Amino acid sequence: MTRAGEHLALLYQGVEAWEQWRQRHSHIHPNLAGCNLGQMDLQGFDLRDTDLTAANLQGANLQGVNLSNSRLCGANLINAQLTGIEGVAINLHHAQLVGADLRDANLIGGDLAEAVLLEAELSRSNLIGCGLKNADIRRAELEAAQLNRADLSYAELESANLIQATLCQANLTHATLMGAYLYGADLSRANLRSARCAQAYMVRANLEDINAEGIDLAWSNLSKVNFKGANLRGASLRGTRLHRAQFHRTCLDGADWELADLQQARGFPDFHC
Image 1 (tube, rainbow, N blue to C red):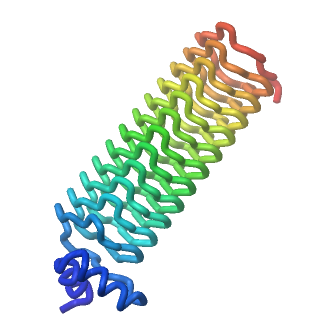
Image 2 (tube, rainbow, N blue to C red; image 1 turned 90 degrees about the vertical axis):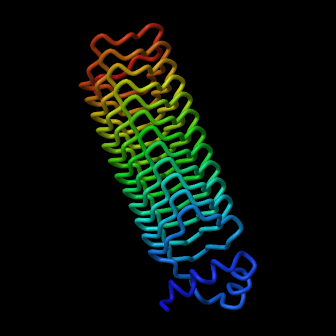
Image 3 (cartoon, one colour; image 1 turned 135 degrees about the horizontal axis):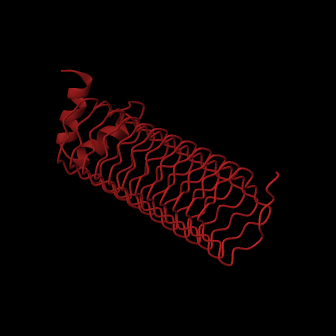
């Protein structure tokens, strides 16, 4: 029997047998790579430092499971229950997480590059410092999620719900946020260079000190947005609603704000920055 087969047999014996084996063999990292764990109830299992590369976990129940430092590259986690998992430094590179429930998950420092999180539930999740480059996060729920310093470059976030999310110092270069909801989101000091954010809803968002050179914000609702110290050189603000937006120390050199509604906007910018 292969190592993966041996460890899968142990898993089938239940939580108690698995925990006893892990305690006796703490130096061994479980190998479940490629195993079929679809629809299984794995709640209560300790899966730290486990190799689950390309494993099938579709519809599995992993609620509250510890997956820290585990490898799930290319794993199938479609519609999996991952609420409240502990996944520090987890590797979900290119994993399939369509419709997965990751509410309140702790994925700090994880690798989710190229992961498919289409319509996933990530509300209140901790994604601080995560790598999400080229990830597909369209129509996902990320309300109040923590994405500080996350790498979201080239990520697809079209129509995602990022209400009250924290994205301080996040890298969103070339990201797509068309039609995204960012009410009250904090993007201070984020890099949004060449990001596509047309028709986004950003009312009361904090965009202080962002680098957003060449950003497309056309037809977005930017009412009461804080643009203090922002670099919007060459940005498209065409048709935007900027009611009571704050522009103190903002650079808008070469920006297009034709048809923009500037009613009660404050602190008009320096056009030669």
